[in-house]
Length: 102
Image 1: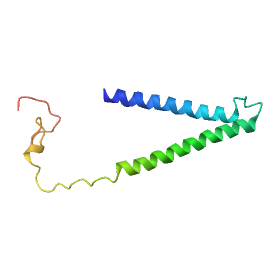
Image 2 (image 1 turned 135 degrees about the horizontal axis):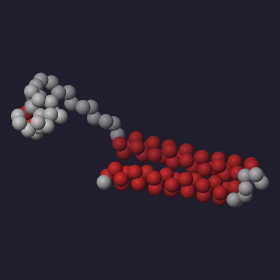
Image 3 (image 1 turned 60 degrees about the vertical axis):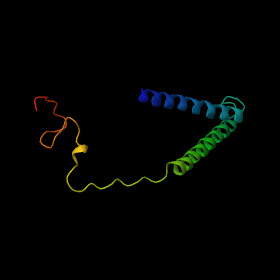
Image 4 (image 1 turned 180 degrees about the horizontal axis):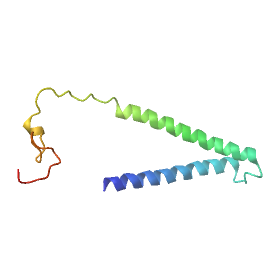
């Protein structure tokens, strides 16, 4: 279920991003055909790329502020406690062994 939500969010976000950048480009060059006024078209695409770059920088800053540094994994020394064993594994049997005869 969570995988479907993440996939859908990515697809909708991508479509929304393309729509916004297209609208910015069209507003800048006035909807003229690229063949009619190439300079205006390039100016519109340039404005869309500037907006995309600003969004990228804003996302990177937000990620660095909200995510913070990772905590180091604790080092495990000595024998593994019994509580860490999965219910289907034991020291003499691999975790993937599903044989119920013991």
